[in-house]
Length: 157
Image (cartoon, rainbow, N blue to C red; front, side):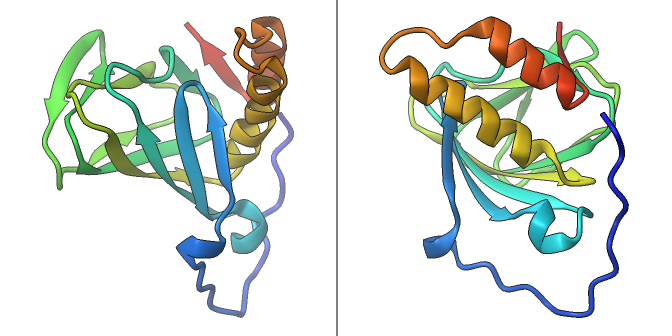
């Protein structure tokens, strides 16, 4: 994945939740509150809602750091091979190269803010959302998802 130059910004950004795009993939719904396009490639921020029992497959990012802030629900993170319950209002930082995942460990929707730096993950998620949408009620074409992940420096493990 080629690294995009980070742009210099001279304007503040206000992103209204009512206008933020909503993407659906991997059983979750992500609202892109701040995109790389808005932040000059520096940063992306998503509000993700994950149904009970769901979460992404274990993976790692070669080019981005991620951090999470759970707002509602019960979440567990898999880090260094161990599941750890993380209470609402806590923070989790996952540096690039760290194999990780999370899951909704409760019986109500999990809502959390996901921050990514530099930006680009939201583009990966949008491309995957297209594959999931094309599959309708059936399973997505996982070879295509894997290829998109590889293009974005994300490896499922």
